[in-house]
Image (cartoon, rainbow, N blue to C red; front, top):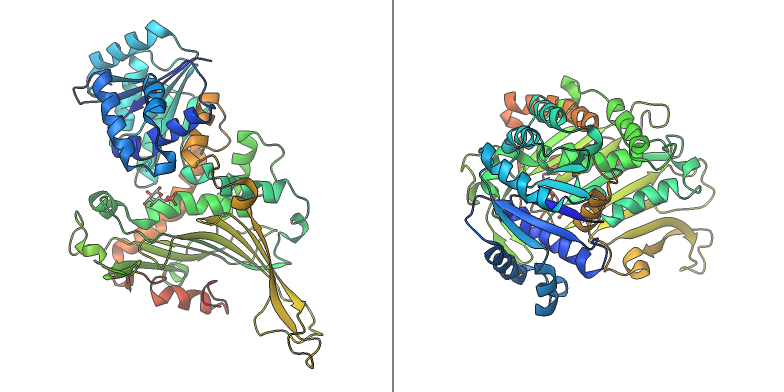
Length: 484
Ligand code: BG6
């Protein structure tokens, strides 16, 4: 199958940090269909050879194991081309169209790795130049808007040019092998389904912790914040994967219909829940990996009086028969104690205790997403550590390490998603109604923060966030996994 992958923003940060390395991995693994071209598009005045040289140099920053040898790069570089374009100029789209027509590939992928402010214009111009035929697919990177209204405007503009089955909205968390394993765990095994409900589960905790700060993205981040950057998309997608009903099959719309139902069932916010069930924090100076690091307000590109959040913890519920009354806690933030994304399913205690067990010990299923990928099942067992104190239980743990089982060299998120786009598989991409529903749900929080600046809590870099996050969960009688 021949394909042309047109990478708008071809010299930008995303292209060289994520997309080129992912495309190279697919090439190395032999999964990238042969007979393809990768066409970088940007304003820069480059020819193919200069573009190849630029990408070659940037591979120096990729981890060693994923870096091409000179011989490999020479073969990969043969796929790379460059077209200089100003996205506001119709004649430049006409030139691109002429270039693509010459080859008439089976599939054309337009990847908009550009500022979202260019999405609407780019889609209109692509359609005007006839670059929206049914064999064309369009890929949109987040953020798609900064609130519900702007998200809708983008989606409407994209849908005027492309049909929904041509539109691939990326949430790279859905491409992670660990997240696909979450779907496999729930819908490939019958074991957990009878337990996956309010009668057995006391609460669910979703954590996406990053140890890095905002790095070089201060200016972008200051306009965005954690709620828009991580909660509206990645964290809510994880919540959907945990909370959704089993889809009737594995087709994209069957899966997306069920995720949408979860988003629609999230309990609406009230003045009381907004003030008690949402914590926003911002990192102050502290330490990370043993080194002193500056606070968020001292980061380059950040307003020194910024009130943008770098941490969010919240409590919500899915109001349906399966989940009514079960708290779902979500937290995510930058400059936290470690890089660690995991989900904890806390089961209810045995209904009647006949053995002595450590206080608070219950069954737990921990789904490790990164950097570890695997499952831990926490049980209670008679350990007989004290020979005289029989029938006193101790916690034990069953570990399933997917990195060991399947190797840590598994298909990366962007590699998987790019191949899915080329093959036309929409399962791991987000539909517009899901996205809009997620924005609808986070909007009251944004609105609340606009009028209440006092709720911003500082936390020291290298910790697990503001103490208000622990206090929020403690009010329900629970604790975050690292605290219990
Ligand atoms: C991106 C956010 O979507 O996800 C970043 O914009 C964040 O701020 C990143 O760092 C986290 O992704 P990962 O795959 O490193 O967990």
